[in-house]
Length: 280
Image 1 (cartoon, rainbow, N blue to C red):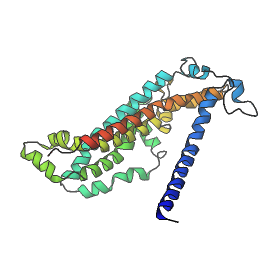
Image 2 (cartoon, rainbow, N blue to C red):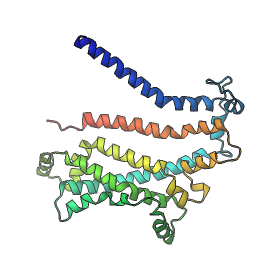
Image 3 (cartoon, rainbow, N blue to C red):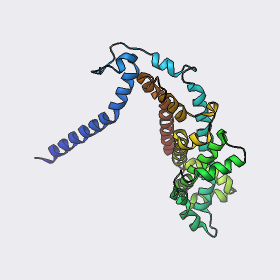
Image 4 (cartoon, rainbow, N blue to C red):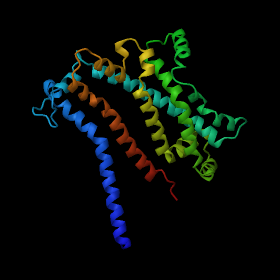
């Protein structure tokens, strides 16, 4: 067999494998969408139908019906917690990551190597001390308590990731900025951040996702339905005695913000890659 034919056969197997993997990943979403478009009776009938015999959008209407599922309230709470936690983690991560990457001071190596010590302890072990600490300052059943916890959870990784990105920036670029009269803070805003857009966006998305998907701490520290985030709200929706499969599958719309976040972050990372270079 010639080399050309071998490459062709390898290419065919490669793309067949990609298509198979995509099918495995997308089939569950296909069934979620089709079940969400079926009537309540058709969704549980045996044998099941692959495609809906009668299309209905009632389950999606139920998701946005405040008497059944206050989606907008939970969505606002999740956005409030996730955006603030990710932003705070990003700001502190940039400052600390820059200091550990570019500045020289005693204990720098020890601090850099000790970030992941916080992950040596299970999240369950931290619940009791965090509960007593936050309750003593009046933050129990407050969204701010969840924000603080999410910052604590994501900040070590944020610092570690950003330090790695800042380490790749040539020292000569910053030295040129200092010659032009830039101090450390100005160097961060005018040199480091524009060059590290892809890394900064990655850290923000990471912190946002951790806060958005949190269920454990939100369950412990939020007791009022007015402050519930989407994971807790969905759990309450699924545990109702009159649960409806179509309505549960229609809850897929709660993942739309995550998809939008990923798409937007990819756009920003590509933009940062093409525009973050230094002009000659």
